[in-house]
Length: 322
Ligand code: ADP
Ligand code: MG
Image (cartoon, rainbow, N blue to C red; front, side, top):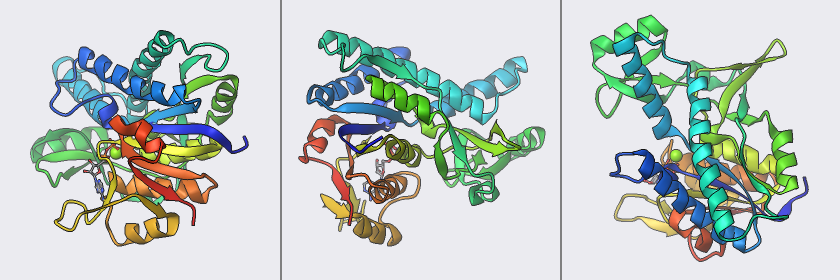
C-alpha cells in the first residue's frame, strides 16, 4: 500500500475501556467504548481513514483471575495465554465494533466511504529465538503467597516470581513483534472501506515451527505491535492514545518537562537516557521511533480525550523523521 496521507492507525490504551476507580461492569465497559468511539467520530468526520488497535493488560489479568477461580472451585483447567489473548480480542473488539458502528449510524457516516467495522482475530508472529523467551519479565494474573506460587509453578510449569509491588505472580516473556499474520486480509478490508480493529492486546503471539504456526505463552506489547500494523498498512500517522497529554522528560520529578516535538534521533537519545519507563511510555516512544524510521510521517502520543487536538497539532507529543 502506498503511504496514504489521510490514513491513521490509532492505538487505544487501557483507559479506552476502563477508567480508574470503576468496578468494570458491562455498563462501565459500554460507556467507555462509546466514549472512545465518539473521539474517533471526530477524526472520521475530518475525512481521515482509520484502523484501530488496543491494549488488553487489565482484561487478560481478569481472564486469568476467572480461570484460577474456576480451577479452585470447579477444577476447570485454565487455558493458555494465547487463548486468553484471543478471548480479549473478541471481548474488546466486539465492544468497539458495536459502539463505533452505532456512532457511525447516528452521525450518518455509514456508506460508500465507511462501509462497516470489523474485528480481526490477529496472530502476531514473533521469533522463536527472541531473547525474551530466556528472560520473562512481564507480570500477569493474580497475586499469590510464596507457598501457593511454588505449588502452581510446579503444577503448570509456570515461572513465578516475587512482584516488586508485593506477593508472587506469574511472569511471561514479552517478545518483539515481527508482524500480523493476517495482514493481507486486513489490507483488503481497509482498502474496501472497512474500519478494522486488529492486533488487539499486541496480537496473539505465535511462532513458526516446521512450517506451522503455534501459539506461545507470552504477551506482546501493544504499542510495538501497533507500529508493525501501521507500517505494514502504510499509514501516514500512528496515533497512540493514553492517559497523559504529553511525553515528559524527567517524568515525575520537579524537573518534569513536556515535549511537543522530537525527531527520531532525539527521542532515541532521551530513550537511552532513561526518560521513559519500560512497560509504559518506553514502548510508545520506541514504537514512534520505529514508525517514522520505517517511512511513517509522524507518530503522535497524546491523551485519549484530546485525540482530535493531538491530530491537529494542538496537543500531544510528535515524533518525526530526522
Ligand atoms: P496505556 O494503557 O495507554 O498503554 P501505560 O500505563 O502503559 O498506558 O502508559 C502511560 C503511562 O506512562 C502514563 O500514565 C505515565 O504514568 C507513564 N509514563 C512513564 N514515563 C513517562 C514519561 N516520560 N512521560 C509521560 N508519561 C510517562
Ligand atoms: Mg501500556
